Amino acid sequence: MTDRTEERRAELAANLARVEQRIAAACAAAGRARDEVTLIVVTKTYPASDVRILSELGVRQVAENRDQDAAPKAGACGDLPLTWHFVGQLQTNKVRSVVGYADVVHSVDRVRLVEALSAAVMKSPRADRELGCLVQVALDAESGAQGTRGGIAPDAVEGIAEAVTAAPGLRLDGLMTVAPLAGAYAGQPRAAFDRLAEISSCLREMHPAANMVSAGMSADLEEAVAAGATHVRIGSAVLGVRTGLR
Image 1 (tube, one colour):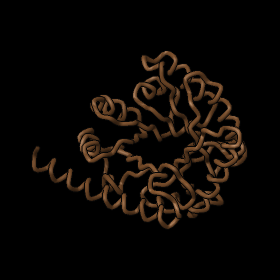
Image 2 (cartoon, rainbow, N blue to C red):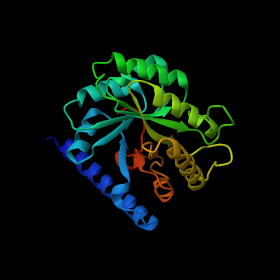
Image 3 (cartoon, rainbow, N blue to C red):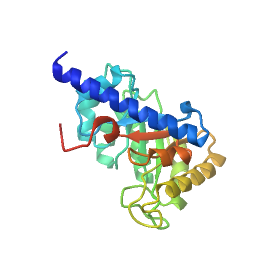
Image 4 (tube, rainbow, N blue to C red):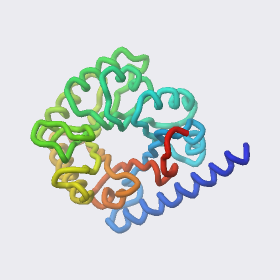
């Protein structure tokens, strides 16, 4: 192992420890058990070598948001015991590639995408498994519209959820949101995540197994945990501030 690799390993280990302390403290403050919250490390713009170090440090859930970066990285790390999450806005022409490595897609926000994912899974060499899907909720979107960062308005969630449930090869796992930059919840991540929790509660009345709530990033994980998030998506707090491709 080179000096640079050792240095990077120490850096990632220290960052992971700090994030773990934050999650544990947030759980304690919310009266939740630590094992109720899963850490997903978002490795976008960082190399496969970092993913390998993270795996050695015990990370099992990693995420990407661009297929052109994720596909080769997942391929290079195919020997590692990882669950891959796709968290970015997803175009239908990228679906076949994403299905090849992703275990969960967090950004399902239209029926056409549901149909494309289902068709790709059924034609995939991995057709014997189900692809986990989260409906992305846009809390800055008007009724029936999409948000500026992807996702659909709350009143369209049930329709997308029903489409996922009916689609072969797909499994409805729950909901995802990104704290909005505009609208009524701009600058209010806790209020946004509380609203997501309400929508999740309604969804579970019809789909009890769809209990995953993906919310919170490096800047607002505490607010997400307080509001009931089951998964937090942490990038820069673990890997460092991104300055471009590395």
